Amino acid sequence: MNYEVPSCAYCPPNVQACRQGESAERGPGFCPTKVDQDGIDCAYAIYDDPEIRQIAQVSAVIEAEGYCKWTRVEEACEFAKRMGFTKVGIANCISFVGEALVMSQILESHGLEVVSVACKHGGIAKEEIGLRDDQKIFPGGHESMCNPVSQAELLNRAGCQFNLVLGLCIGHDSLFIKHSEGLVSVLVTKDRVLAHNPIGALHLADTYFNRVWGPERPEKKPKLPAGGRK
Image (cartoon, rainbow, N blue to C red; front, top):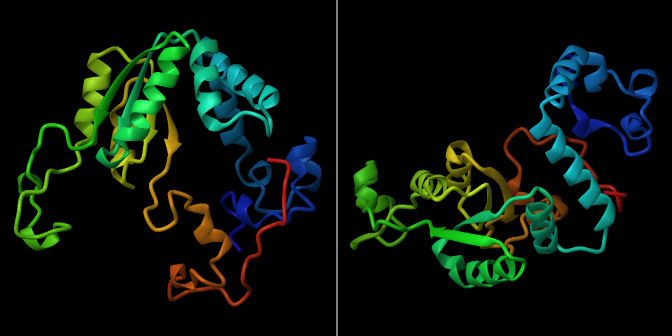
């Protein structure tokens, strides 16, 4: 165990002192309050920024009001409205065009303007970014590259204040988030194997999906708590 960096993943469920606001007294040695209180203090100062504070406040209110009642779709609509946003962007995988249409119509039904950009727009061949033919999904023909940087640029140019990621591939979503000027939230995380429910691989890491482990798998297998408040 490394006691020099925060390691909250290893905090026992029956400890989690931060829930009670007593981290300094009861938190384990790898608790952030023990290893980097200065970092916590520096980050907290950022909440003095009015925009950052508003985002934090609105998020907390939505969490409380919709707790175990609202779907993430409903939360996204409420967040956009309560933040005073008028234009929402959707950065979707080309395979999620149908879902993007439904989400666009839902957002529009709440009085929001929506701009949507699919990942394959532009039709740029994967060879243009240096991929070989054998690195394609289906070699031997044209495959358009996913274009998350351009997705972000087009939504930026359209003036989107809040962008929703809908099924972008891992890494592509990272590039989109990096280049988006508007706030970003993930509506759907792609996982073609698990019906876009990647947490399934964690819950079944010791059984059906034990292939996720690397060569340095710990002898003592971690166990997820049966349930929690969040």
